[in-house]
Image (cartoon, rainbow, N blue to C red):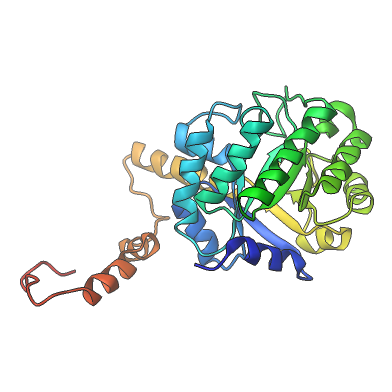
Amino acid sequence: MPNQTEHLRQLLAGPDLLAMPCCFDGLSAHLVEEAGFPLTFMSGFAVAAARLGLPDTGLISYGEMADQGVNICSRVRIPVIGDGDTGYGNAINVKRTVAGYRQAGFAGVMIEDQMAPKRCGHTRGKQVVERSEALARIRAAVDARETGGDIIILARTDARATHGLDEALWRARAFVDLGADIVFVEAPRSESEMRRCCREVPGPQLANMLEQGATPLLPPERLQDMGYKIAAYPLTLLSSAARAMREALAELKAGRHPERLLSFAELKTVVGFDDYYAQEAHYATPDDNPGREKE
């Protein structure tokens, strides 16, 4: 497999905005890749929902997230950035999280400045740590990258909601000075605020395009014009899947069979039966049972 961190660096050095639908398991990551997107992100909100059926309020652990990451990264050949939340503890925990995510196969890891237990950036009740702790987390993440193997550091601040945009921009600039590769100022509330983020903070920046969130939902060409490098769509796939399942269940409850389904043949292809059969044929031996069932 190619060096995914280097691949991600090459993408960041390119001229175009990177559209990044976010995944939550091996299947959703595979679908992102199949659709032709150049990278994906393992969303903590989506993993907590899909794996635990619980909200993104700090309930999912480092071990569960890293394990989910192994499944995701091993399924695709595009770079994956992993949601590392707050690093799951102090600066030493941050170093372990970054090293563990690199070992899981992630090309990048996001570390944020929220106070534990963290929560979705577009929900109420979040708080951020003091400047000193926020900087220590990113310093530790950069140290882990430099001593344990290359990985992209995506530094996120949620200070806009609690301390205002000026503080968020101060933290973002400080994260860049410490060596963060990408900066994410969460939940700016207007296009003018988004433009300030791109104008006043150097380096690649991520825009979080959450449907019905606090930040304006803008088309890719406008985000690129502002100066953003990545447009993340954190919950589009999870929301689409949940709606489709609800609709299918309502049809079954009403005594009808859902019509908006993949064919069985398409579903088998999506989950990898065609590839499996090809490998099975490649390694077949003369002793294999010629009378086995065929589809």
